[in-house]
Image (cartoon, rainbow, N blue to C red):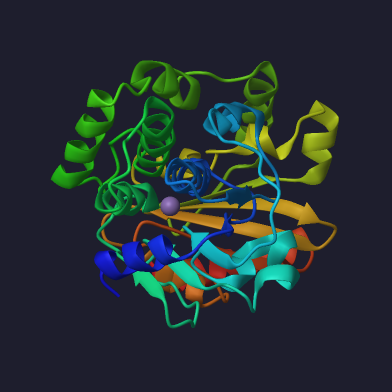
Length: 311
Ligand SMILES: [Mn+2]
């Protein structure tokens, strides 16, 4: 599909639900609420469906009207696979009408699909889309889109950042987004619980592949002991890759008794998405994920063995 076709479809629809992925991040929420605001500005009914709403992203709802309606059209944003719908999967897996995403690995099989893997954030696509829709980019919309772009690029530091990323960010600044406040809240603020978690996290760190790989783990027991929510674990995936000489950083987060979410971050052209595909996941070149079941020791040894062969 072209962006114009996406725009025309949305213009012809009303009563629209916008889906975000499980454990939502700044990009999927930024997309959801920006698109919702854009559709409402055009006189349509719209709402965002989330499986949770981290407190630090509450401001993304600013200006969004709560509307009661029967859904007629469902759009997914920043969702690469139906499995990432999480708790909402059963209700929505067969009724998505339009998929907008920036993951090259997107495997949602529907006719109306717009995937641009050159976009650093799905919010870049939403920006172009709402410009095409002749929506006025309000401060609230700009804050949503800037949040998605800043978080998916690690504040414009990751290699996915392009000149276009900066050009869009500049337009969002012209529209009055609170860039300094957003960046302070997203990148330079840690809760006391988070500091305590990082302290414990370093104890779990192990190296493999002669120091070219590092793995860390967060268990439910650690979260419980520190009395913290999974909100406070966001971004810890970046930690193992920061270490000098590490090409692959693996973060294992326990989700339930024998169930783990694995995040892989890589340097120097190591394909994180290909690695995660071995475990049924996927993602981007330098950032990907998968889910693995089993007890922690066996999950860890499977990951390390596969990673040593892969690196
Ligand atoms: Mn994204």
